[in-house]
Amino acid sequence: MLEIKFVRQNLSLVQEALKNRNTSADLEIFQKSDEDRREILAQVESLRHRRNVVSQQIAEMKKSGDDADDLVKEMREVGNTVKELENSMTKLGDVLRKLLLRIPNIPHNSTPIGKDEKDNRVVRVIGNPTNFDFEVKAHWDIGEDLKILDFERASRITGARFPLYFGAGAKLERSLINFMIDIHTTKHGYKEVLPPFIVNRESITNTGQLPKFEEDLFKLQGWDFFLIPTAEVPVTNIHQNEILDEDILPVYYVAYSPCFRSEAGSYGKDTRGLIRQHQFNKIEMVKFSKPENSYDELETLTDNAETILKALELPYRVIALCTGDLGFSAAKTYDLEVWMPAQGVYREISSCSNFEDFQARRGNIRLKRKGQKGTELVHTLNGSGLAVGRTVAAILENYQQIDGSVKVPEALKPYMGGMEVIRDEN
RNA sequence: GGAGAGAUGGCCGAGUCGGCUGAAGGCGCUCGCCUGCUAAGCGAGUGUGGGGGGAAACCUCCACCGAGGGUUCGAAUCCCUCUCUCUCCGCCA
Image (tube, rainbow, N blue to C red; front, side):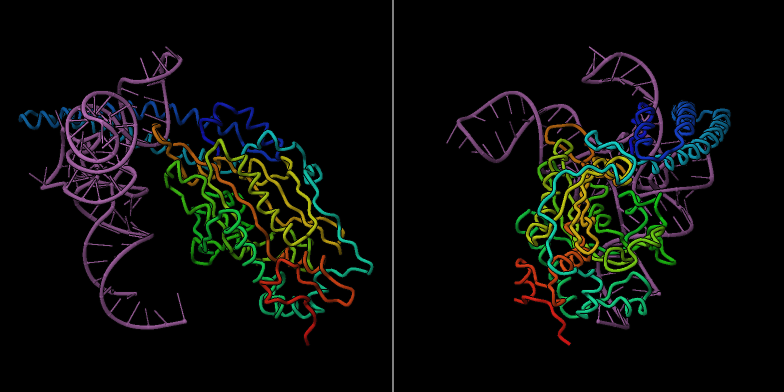
């Protein structure tokens, strides 16, 4: 959420940001409601002031036995007026809050301006697309042929877009989870957390998925709770309504969680394989930072995610999302895209963002500096490190061999109990 | 699921029969004094959000004692609803 004062004073800047994001919000209603509300506020406050003063008088008069009936009567009137004005003020306040909650973050000035994903900027390319001297198979065929993935049975258990892993496939997924968390905790200084996978409305509003994108979420029937679409939600909310001491910052957390997404509106896309599932596993890194350091933190965060891809020796590239492709809460985002040989394209496998104080304002996450009065909002960041299902897909495709087996990446062998190659054991 | 207790400022904790309590007291923190160093001591200050004024230091007003309603001229204090925490019982991985 943007600060109401900021929006009030920078309407054209906000307008411009909305335009760059290909979105809009009714800023005229905002402006009008804001002015009206402040006008009423002034009236209410002076009436309340008068009531406070006179109430004091009434107390004194009663104490000395004087008759205060006239004043009491008058104050009853004042009280009624105040109540009426307060009601209209509450209504305007609701309008304003609803509008504010739906205004996305202002993109950072280093975020390229552009319409859609075609305008994203390639920042760097690491490694070369894997070479094969045979015809490569898509990961879903590899997985099904090796009997480690079973989309058919999964769809019977639940429906389309749910994963079912067997044997070495299940173990590969589990190994990757441990491998990634181990690297982030031992090499990058993150603290491991295991958060709730169901969150309440407030938490998921704080991170920005609500109120605008409720249709993307799975909601629990009979509860105002949601399945998390990413561990970002519970982990960022660890510190909601807290004042963090300056010297504990920056705080780094890494969490494993399953992620649940309705994928509304993506019916035709990625219908096969592990790329787009309603449930998938992800390792998420979350940072709380002082404002002045958050862009440096974004670089190291991205580097931390890249470390995993490098360790797995998967070719990838880093792109900077343009304003039109940027997520609602983010001011700047780098996507990591891994090379997928079967489709011959780079596919998103991680997204690393700086939200500046946008989420912190919603979640009231503040910082207190030594020797300074007051508090200020922290900056929050997060990035996948990495999406596990997509990593499995990338490994299957990039490490496939002509006989249909798949080599285990060197770095993963210890986690796979020394297994060198995944082959059909049946 | 049943029974009970509680929720106050960064933390601990007091608030009587509703009215100088935005909130005692303590801790912590900041500044100053004092002291060979450290420790202790002394003095002052120290919540958040919002409106108005001022270039600014700051001044002023309003709101906030888990959340939301209600009663009242006036509510941290009374009433109602909800949420959360704790204890005991039951049940359960």
